[in-house]
Amino acid sequence: MKSNDFSFRLFGKALVLIDWANFFGTTRKRWIINPKKFFGYLKKYREISRICFFYGEDNHEKSREFLAKIQKIGFELFTKKVKKINGQRKCDFDVEIAREILLNLKNFDEFLLFSGDGDYALVLRDILDLQKRLFVISARGSMGREIFELRDEWRDKKGGKIILSPAEKILPHFAQKKVAPKIFSNPRGEI
Image 1 (tube, rainbow, N blue to C red):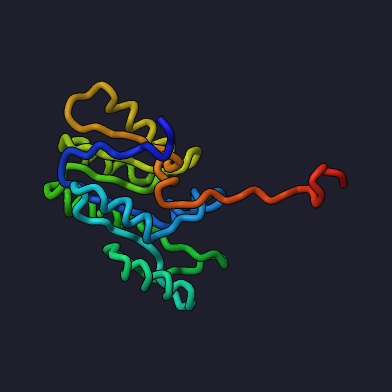
Image 2 (image 1 turned 90 degrees about the vertical axis):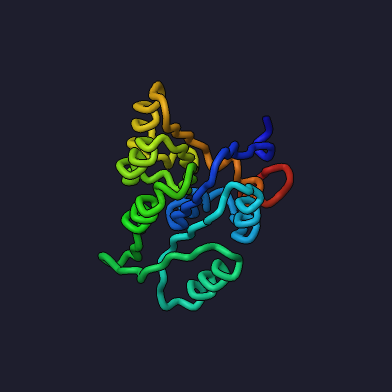
């Protein structure tokens, strides 16, 4: 199966949760994601009824423009102020995403989490305990150890099911692969 032939097999009402800083941060070295195409890709699944997008808010014009674009596209936007810690911009949404999952455990049959952050493992276990299906989508090499341990723990259990999906399987639907820079300036590669 080619990577651009991949599709999710959804069987019930589904909630999508996108930790944008995590998902974008782990894919941006090799992919340029088009948010409008990303939304369109997700909307083609009739089972998906909500698409939640979590991203930090600050006073930068480009950031404000991006958030306005995300909202205009149709994502359900969740924001909070970006903090500076030791000169680094920081805005984690672990608690907000976990809260959204817990508030919606009884309303959805399937959950699609676009983040490989191992900090979610505890709340993801709650999804599985209720015999729901869970997809965790993250770039290769960026899935937390705790997520793999959870998958291994649930492998032979009845009920809930966890499916780990490399982002690279679905990115061709809504992202453009970055071209590697040319090392040499002439066609024969002479320096």
